[in-house]
Length: 289
Ligand SMILES: N[C@@H](CCC(=O)N[C@@H](CS)C(=O)NCC(=O)O)C(=O)O
Picture 1: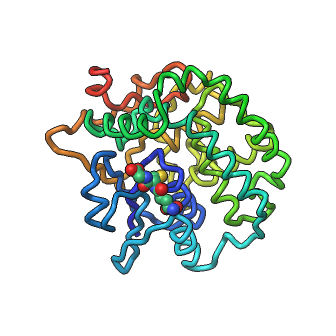
Picture 2: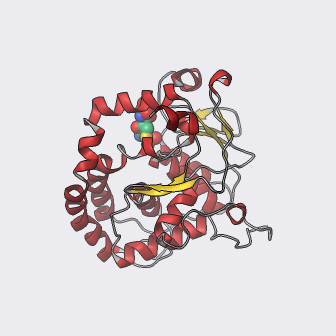
């Protein structure tokens, strides 16, 4: 199975988390933001995520992908769903975009590996949302607007390992949204939300140095973790997932001519203002900002 995706895309994360929870291999292909051609060639339009199934056919709709992957072997997303969770996540999603979209271009994500890709994202999202700087300047107010919903969610969480006590499609609805909004440094999850978020993320990406399912050291264990002392556990969990990772199954797609320098893991990690710290992977782009 091959997933064409953006690292920042929460719908893509639905699919990725399902494969990870099932311990199934999923080849992740990061599409550059301006690479509309790849998407169009696969499915005739610009859309992400796209899952190419084992039979070679592409699939659209993230929830269909989740069900397809969960259907391999014994399903795990078998718990009951709650309609209140669906409506709450819809509500939360409308409030997270103004917080998250203006931050993604600052994270050094692999889908923005070229200046053109980064500008493509900034232009199209600015058209849809408005000025990024203005939105970032409204962070406190936006967080205040979101908190009542997160508190409501807190009251709905039945356990740290599954929102309804047993894994279900509701976990697929909720966790990707939390992962996205966790890039906002000033935002503190209520206790149960934080416990749920961290335990789920650790299941998907084991903590640093923890043995992987096959007994080997996890690949995260080999990475340097930025600001390990000062970071909250939450932001480091996010860093592990949002931050770029070097995995052999990942293929970065960008113009060879504009290839940016290979990532360095160690000393260049740094925090930038109010976003969760991530590695500064793309010095060419940073130099031009
Ligand atoms: N219902 C689809 C929605 C897919 C979708 O809206 N994807 C967004 C990205 S998250 C997209 O392709 N937007 C167009 C773009 O990025 O230009 C699904 O759940 O997979």
